[in-house]
Length: 185
Image (cartoon, rainbow, N blue to C red; front, side, top):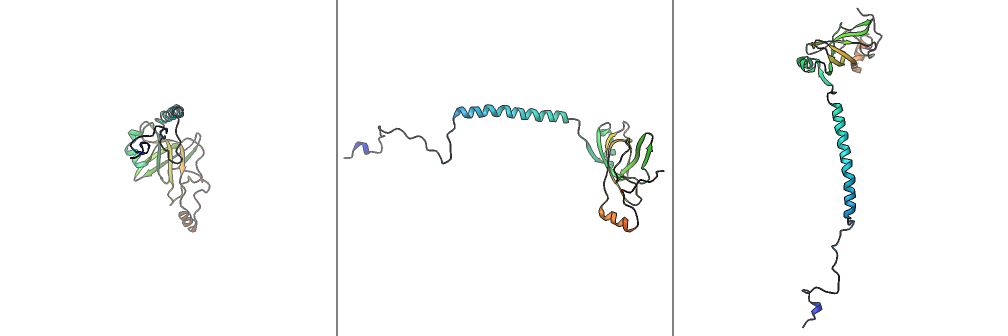
């Protein structure tokens, strides 16, 4: 017969049970350490959420709508007395500078829709010139007046014509768009 200690069905009473085997690189986590990490993570997540909430509340109503002139005028009731950015081309012959009070008045257009602009500052970009035969792209920031008929600008940005257009004008003997501003009518 076989020896009772050798039978596989009987557990050995002399050995301690083996702990579960861990994979290589696996570290047993202490429940107390996990609790400490969780207690640190919760305030960090709450602080991040609070910062995001404050930023969103501060930005509410501060957005600037950017629209081409034709779209802006089609929906002008929606944008009256709100900050807007309008994009279009300078209408030739409309750029006028007044000295007292110092301001610029001009009109921009897109797809046949025209918007008169008043810019109450003395300095405009060098590229903001009315040059015959050259389209000057203009972006203005400001607010539509209460009647929506014009825009009170706080900033004027003029887009530079392409270098190819400038070379073509120079070949025809014309001056660059940033040449000195001549007398206004």
